[in-house]
Amino acid sequence: MSVYQKTVLDNGLRIVTSEMPHTRSVCISIFIGAGSRYELPEQAGLSHFVEHLCFKGTERRPTSKEISETIDGVGGVLNGGTDKELTVYWVKVARPHYLVALDLLVDMLRNSKFDPVEMENERKVIIEELNMSMDSPQSRVDTLIDEVVWPNQALGRDVAGSKDTVSAINRQTILGHVSRLYLPGNSVISVAGDISHDEVVDSIAKAFGDWPNGVAGDWSPAEDSQDTPRLKVEPRKTEQVHLCMAVRGLSNRHPDRFILDLLNVVLGEGMSSRLFLEIRERKGLAYDIHSHVSYFRDSGSLAIYAGVDPKKIELTLEAILGELVRLRDDRIPEAEVIKAKEMGKGRLMLRMEDTRSVSGWMGGQELLTGRVLSVDEVVSIVDAITASDMQRVAKELFLTSKVNLALVGPVRNKGRLEKLLKL
Image (tube, rainbow, N blue to C red; front, top):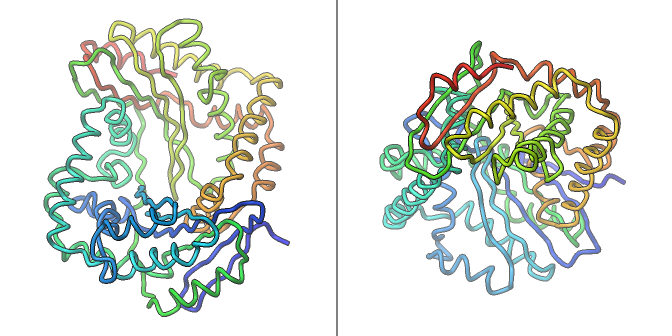
């Protein structure tokens, strides 16, 4: 029997489940194909705005207090999130409260009022969220690097939008966005916990079976015309310079994405990664340094973050670039490959003990790739990766022409930094 089961309702709504009888909880996640890639430039932040408003009241639960009390009252957790390619609403409750949780999510998705007064209040809240992100140099550089990697396109925009675009969004635009993207054929409901597939399908068919389908709006494709390094500096009077270096990566359907995951573990995940050992432990240049990968439908990135003394930027950049060159030009020792594999597999397996993680794992894959890989399948793929595979991918991605750098802080030597961006 498959670890995951899938049923598609007549209206196109996909249901994926994982029965976890050893747990006492159930997590329901509803994934919608709506995010910043589905927005026009002047609508930036629209998907995020809609997500916020879905928590603000329905006909049956007129206020946000009644929505939150529904789940607080049974000891559960309710939340949502918006990314570039999806919006997710999720609730985790003790098993006896499954139907309460499902009823609430149905109500929020299908009966939200989008009340004009609540909308104006939430507009102010989102602008404060943007202000908070802007005031945090670490958050700001994370947004800025996307602008450098994907300039003048949807993937490069902040998911939350800007003060100007959020201020301009009206109720008609909100309703149009919901009717265009909040459709069963553009959605996945993922349920993990001590519950059978049949019970889930039966309850969701009753709740969502009459949800009318339509043709979902499309997303903006990524453009890649980079042939020279790019650098963007945002001056700030801060104690540190916050830097983010990135190269364009791979899509979430690319067969080499698991190889890039493993390269990233070696490079910058954990306290025994190459970046941590070289830049923090040996050279004392940074307190926080790490790398991470992002995957999208037709693009992706590998990014490195560090916060450093303004006088040590050049030394830090040289050290980071040196580690990328070493991964590209020198074969990774077998012991290091094995350690990275065991770390990646171990973290994945530990995550899969939690119903929230399993629900997110299934739903995200189903929505974005149309296929749910099991943990065992991923483990088999990772086990088959060789040092030669990793070097091949490093040679394809770690190129001078593909280097991007964003800096937030007191930077005075931009010209010298540009000359350093060589691999």
